[in-house]
Length: 366
Image 1 (cartoon, helix red, strand yellow):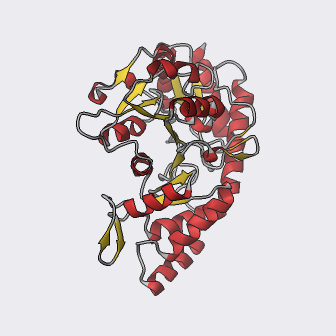
Image 2 (image 1 turned 90 degrees about the horizontal axis):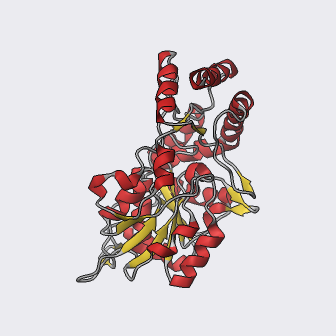
């Protein structure tokens, strides 16, 4: 069976050396030596400052909301954040969980990211933030979004969980906004088995967030914030350091997968339009088919030959009733969600397997 993705397992020899060090130091958590090293190395590799490691990508979003003052409503207040319906559920559910109402606006039908032209009509006196998503690692229109946020005095928290290592106009895409978050889940391009990170624009926001991830504790007898436990541990950091050593080869392998798919599929399926000025990370290979019937046919054909593709993202989140969210109609997101599928992409895939997958897609589309 070929899954849509597989966790990357780095050198066992390297991992064992890091684990030996953990046993020697007997320091498992609370900003250990390996967490500090991984923080430094990620800032260097990504070209960012003010990076904070946390225990997962969802908590990364929630800590960012709180550190930036987006959540924490007073009596009678109902804070809102404008976001996209074409994303993983955690983007919206993290808002809801933190007492912030997600307000959905539609996407650009070509880039698949939040369309800036739809934002201003959704702004109300309760709006505190914009939460765009760099979908599949493609850049949002960051200049337009940041301009709108400044005009209306709103915070911008970019969900950059797909955007590890992506550069825009020569600099890290993660530098945009008041904060950008990353997921280091096992299936991500870069992972720590479970984990995540926040990149803050301002040092003072980083310092506040550092207190929050450790229950608000700042000393043996001092508590300064209402916090939570969101720390990354030393075993997670060890995995991350090993994967980071091999990340350039991981990206090259995935680029080869992308190139083979592109060569086989050509223009016979719709693909995401990547923004100009992007150095892409090849974390996913999404295609949009003619309609939902064709999508079901393609997925069934692939499954019959042992290939598991994934409807990602589905459903469009404005249709998820438990979110009970404010939204206008989002036809572009809904239409895309009904016909999009991600094909398998990971380092171990062989050329003949990729060609066979592409051929099955084309046959099912006829």
